[in-house]
Image (cartoon, rainbow, N blue to C red; front, side, top):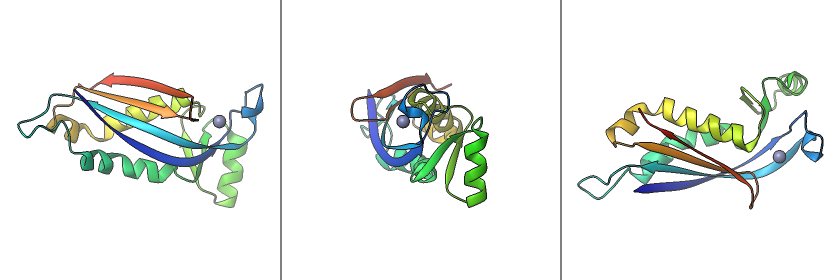
Length: 142
Ligand SMILES: [Zn+2]
């Protein structure tokens, strides 16, 4: 069985190599659905929704109202550092696919204990860049 929780944030980003309009700095109202797969425990619960919130809130707080900058976008990073504007550094370009992979890795790596305690077998992430466009990936928990 799967339980899931939805998160939202506002952020700006750009894709410097993009031929179309995504080359320009612009914003999205991102939505993310995080799924946890496992068997309900004796209380009929896979994982406490509050535990999910505690897991994700720090990450969402870091990215909310920030500009997502790829570490390869040196020009933009220099401006944000000089101005001391809030930014969220990604190891690669800020496509929905890369954000999805990054959040999935981060959530699993930073919450091994909680995932183990709840016998979570798989985590899934959907990142919505717009109302109609999203990236989805899942990963087994070792
Ligand atoms: Zn965009």
